[in-house]
Length: 102
Image 1 (cartoon, rainbow, N blue to C red):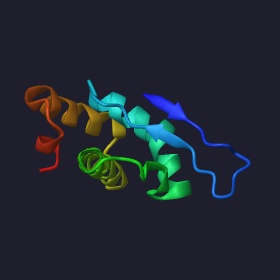
Image 2 (cartoon, rainbow, N blue to C red; image 1 turned 90 degrees about the vertical axis):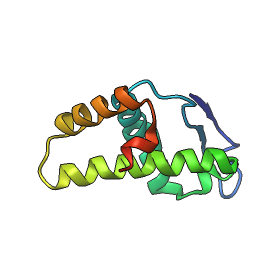
Image 3 (cartoon, rainbow, N blue to C red; image 1 turned 60 degrees about the horizontal axis):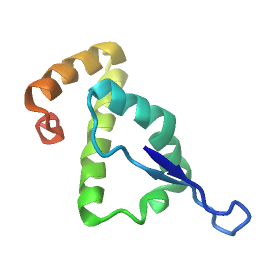
């Protein structure tokens, strides 16, 4: 993970964050989402990732979908820990975010 910053004195300053290229666990994804990505999404929308390639953007949208599903399950009453454990089993079996979108 790489954090880059533009000059904070420039108008329209947006901190750039490079999403991890590979995630080894759902917990890693969730931690990155809560600590780095969700705050950037709330503050800047998609501007912080405007330099992403189309492939990287596709990866991000899958990632975001999964994180939103975790949040939705939590809002429905499931403990985050339980949601993460359930998805972790699927992730370890498939090693693919695509499998988690279903």
